[in-house]
Amino acid sequence: MLKPTKILVPTDFSEFSDKALRQALDIAAHYQAKVFVLHVVHEHITQCVFDYCLSTAEVERAEAQLMGAAKQNLEKQLAKFPRAKEVELTADIRKGIPAEEILKEEEEKGIDLIVIASLGQTGLSKYLVGSIARNVLKGAKCPVLLTK
Image (cartoon, rainbow, N blue to C red; front, top):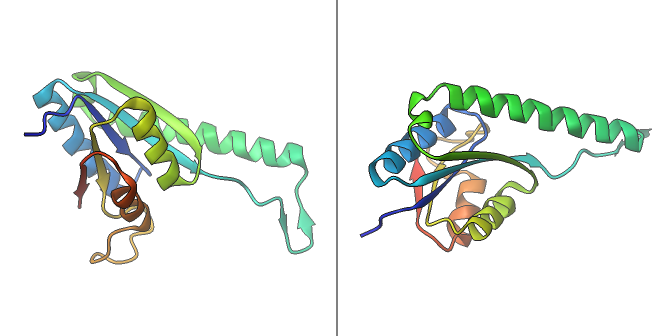
């Protein structure tokens, strides 16, 4: 029987991610597991679009703003859940391709359960598993719990 000790919860701050986080916190409280909450800021900002280009400094400033906004959103999301204070929890923000960074986090932290929303902010259809969740499910070495 699975008794997780390290649970990874990827988040995009959507209501679907809230449900995944709630589920993970319940599981963590039951098994005294540690929770790792992760948000991935997409890989990069395009420097040029058509004939307009941003300077390197402008791109770096925009990326810093994205990281700062992500940190604030992560804090707001965690504040919604009083149970987050009852378990050992670590929150992190990474930059890159979401599914790849989630799988790297799994390997680096020795995660034994990933709890991920089946849909995210782009919620294309209620009947399809989101592409990030699908890629995590295909690449994960540990069990993955998809939530709706």
